[in-house]
Amino acid sequence: MRFIVALGLLFLLAACATSPFTMTREMNPHPQPELREREAFIAALDQFSATNRLELLAAFQRDYPGSSLKPYADTISRYARELDNRKAQLGELQVEQQELQLQLEAAQQKNQRLKEENLQLDEKIEQLKKLLIELEQRSQ
Image (tube, rainbow, N blue to C red):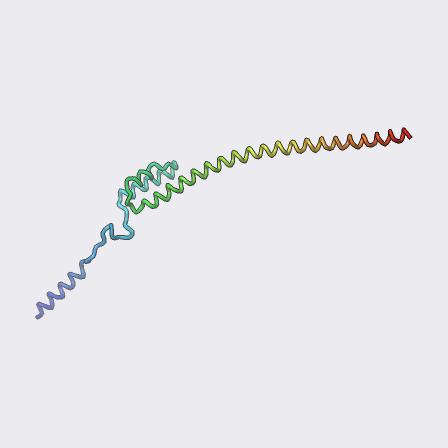
């Protein structure tokens, strides 16, 4: 009897010592990237940080399509392209702003010139009015 109880206890302890369920990579919701994947991703990030070039990130995305790090590489690539597009738009807008600034300065100069011309014409009108008054007074 003791032997059966001891044997049952031994089986129970042996069963508790081993896990009946081991997670495989497919079952793990947050799998750890393999060392090669991590090294490739870090190298791609290093290249991107130093040069803003996306070649290694694109290679990482192509070479490790199932990697848990791929969404990060996708996000970095997408934001880098968007940043490049916005920089190009900013450059175009700056050129347009400079052109508009030149047009504004030309319009302001023309406006100033016309104001001065207007003042001169007003002075001439006043002189002509005075002459007309003088002529009318002489004729009487």
